[in-house]
Length: 144
Image 1 (cartoon, rainbow, N blue to C red):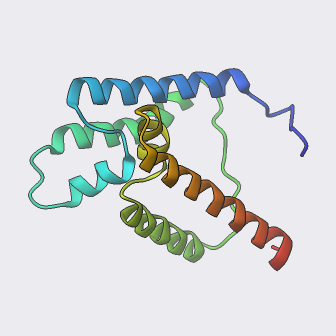
Image 2 (cartoon, rainbow, N blue to C red):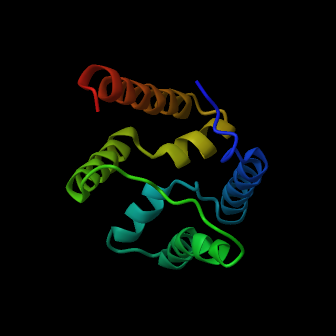
Image 3 (cartoon, one colour):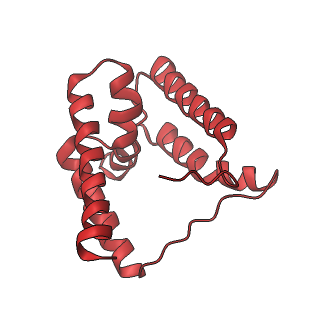
């Protein structure tokens, strides 16, 4: 494995991780809710939604933070080499997986593991192993 030292930003990555952790801690301490993106969005789509204000605020921050950050410097650009159809299907499958797993990587990985949840540890390990296997199959067996 080679590290791309030109784009290697451990300081910014650490800062981002600390901000994510702080935001998750504030949400659970002030609102008693877990910062799982799929659960926040899913709860907003359910009827009736009695707690739409904090959910919309959270999602606005999720979308607005990169916009604000772009005012202070150049943002990383995703370089995706696939069709929009594949992106939509992949997004649908991820959404379906989060419903079956009872949460997403942010809910289980950031919040669940920090609370010592065995269920979240197993879910996060499953997410990671599935990702590793998918990349391995795609790159080395299929040849993508």
